[in-house]
Every structure is written in structure tokens, then in C-alpha cells.
Length: 178
Image 1 (tube, rainbow, N blue to C red):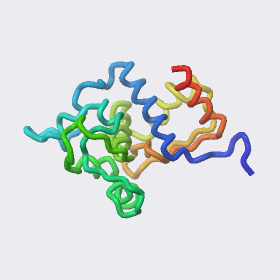
Image 2 (tube, helix red, strand yellow):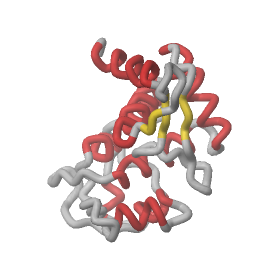
Image 3 (tube, rainbow, N blue to C red):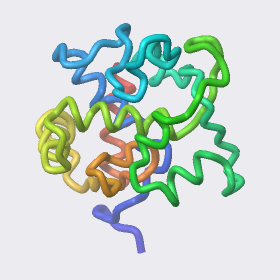
């Protein structure tokens, strides 16, 4: 029952699409890997989260307390299945370690990255879709890709993108070709 156009849920391969789109924004000078990320909740003087960089989010070393153990009861599950504004939920988390000192795999990092992506391209779901099509999907020939969004218009860039097997292979080839 699976054909050339069948949408296949990417789960964590969705992070690679988010990663590529963030990389395009860095290349364009719209985001910086080494500067603290612009998250309002972390702007207060003395807030240690204000030191978290884009690179730390991409590498999953932010230090944010966003445990993901796939139990269904962890903060990550709460974010994915209960929270309306997923990125705001993650931004509200405290640190369990200083930024850059501990690795912690969690979808939360990629929901924050998805919010930064959304804001950098204009702040709307339509602008995210247009940017992704123009800068990534179109050039790669990815013709059967679906991006899911939360209720705030933030892409669900950690695990809820769908694409045909051929389109996932096109994305994989981008990474193989460096």
C-alpha cells in the first residue's frame, strides 16, 4: 500500500529538515550559531538561559531540563501532547546543567529551533512553508512534503514532518553530499 507519493512520518528525521532550514538562515546571516538565541523569556539580566546559543540547541547541549524518556509522562510528552504553545513551554524550563556542558536528547530543542525559524522568516505558518519550499524543498526536488504546525504557527520540526520515501532520500542525499 505504499507508493511513490505516500506520506511517511519522519519522526526524528524531521530534525534534519529543521537543521537544514536553520543552516540556510545562518548562511544568509539571519541567525548566528555562536550568539545567544533571541528568546524573550531568557532576556532578564542574570538569567543563565540567556547564554544558550543556536549551536547548543542544534547539538542538544543547552542544559535545559527537558527530559525525554518516552514514558508518556516526561516533560517532552507533556510538551508534544498537552501544551498549545510548545516552544513557550520549552523556553519556560529551567536548567539542569550550564549551557554547553551536558548532552540531553529532546524534541524540545528542535521546537525552540522551529520557533526561531518561524520568527526569522516572518512569523507565520505561510511564510515558513514558502521559505522551506523556496530554499530547500524546491531545490532538492522534494515534491511530496508536509510540515505540521502547532496552534501558534510554529513548525513541529522535531518529529512531525511527512514526506514520500523518495523525498526523504533526497534529503539524505543532501547530507551525504555535505
